[in-house]
Length: 443
Image (cartoon, rainbow, N blue to C red; front, side):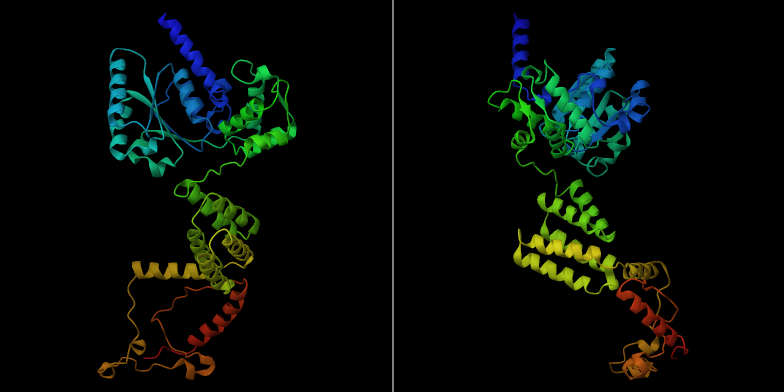
């Protein structure tokens, strides 16, 4: 009777599972995506072939198969599967699982594959508790995280694990999963004989952003919410209604924030306004802090545009002030205008390079004394010390340039480019430097 009750309970639980859970691959051959490390001849494939899995960390966006692959690895290595969530489990639960795994190994039993979801949420003490058993091979650790483990997980744990980065599923991968779900009579929606036209399938695959769970969830809603799901022909309108407004995956404090900011800056630096506008929109839709965006644009105006377009910096500062004054949603217009202008502006990092080289010389080289003729002479006793003696007032010199030594050694830090206004500055600077070198330094 106990077995009958257990079977009935299992069947009831299966019935309430969403489509994405029911369609999880049951064998490694059914697994879709991640061929860059799971394909034949790739690293994880070789580790499985050699029966030397070891501990691994899977990181990547949601819905790309991290949990599914962890379960399949336990099956492929004939290991006992245990699962913990770093959100709900503490050191007590962790030690219980580790003790159970050690006893099993000591008794000659199977190894234990321990999957820890959101492993980056374990504090340092909890992560350290894993180290001895991971190092001794008592458990095969599979840590799952949406955050970059090189920032979010202890160095000691990362060094003992192979790190695999999961990529968002391709449009073709999502299409294959949707077709499989529509045709599967046991776990999927095959009993409804529903079909989907090519336009709707492409739309669903693209709007899902590589997230299988999102695609299958929308598919299930589209089929089951129909007045007559039997032999339903899914078109784009039906699918779009099921999808509704998609959630933008964006963590304003994690990898998404830094990666999108990097893409924004590099797109503007590369003079691509279209890419710059897209990454700006991506960050705004994800709830990025407008002040952060404004600060980055002010920095870029000096770092990457510089004197090639002297108007860039005041424009960026004006945009920062306007964003503070206007706020969202209207300040998106100001940000878009600034991004477009900075992307199209001529580029120069000459000032950036100059200050970098000068600070390096200050840190690493001999500190240069201030030449005596440049020293402050506006105090009693300065004349007796000879401070300021021989200084030439530049405004009294021809062209406003006094031929005297201002540094004590010959250095050229600022090297203007031949782009934009900086080309004119470069020509003027060459004439100035020739004049400065035409006479010996003042004594």
